[in-house]
Every structure is written in structure tokens, then in C-alpha cells.
Image (cartoon, rainbow, N blue to C red; front, side, top):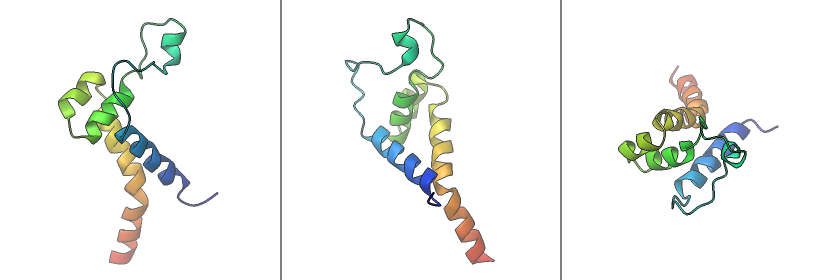
Length: 91
């Protein structure tokens, strides 16, 4: 398995979320909603990350409170190998 597989997957995921269509007419992909549950802890997270990537933090938090934090965590996971490279070169 390549060394940076996780970073590549997260990068493409964020790119897809950045360019996703957020119109309300879209059919939901949530399995909880398809099975009839009214509450889903993850619903709105994709939209929230979309708005966080577009720096609209108020709307991001309106869709899901953890969206901006999830975006920062994913960006950290993508950039983590670069921090170790810089640390090695600086010492």
C-alpha cells in the first residue's frame, strides 16, 4: 500500500465536497432517513464541510456544529506528513 494513500483519499474527498451541489432538491444519501429515522448524528455534515471550505462559517455551523472542526481535522490529516518532513529538514 502506498505511503500517502490516506492523504490522497482525504484530498479527493475534500475536493469533491468543495465542488458539490448543495441545492435542497437533491435526494438524501442518508441511510437513517431512508429507514425512517428522524434523527441522524451525521446529517448536514457534508453541507457543513462545504460551507466551511468556502469560509462561510455561520452557515457551516447552521448545518452541523462539528463541520468546521471536522474540516480542520481532515486538513490536519492531509498536511501531517508535511509537518514531519519540515521538522526533519529543520533539525
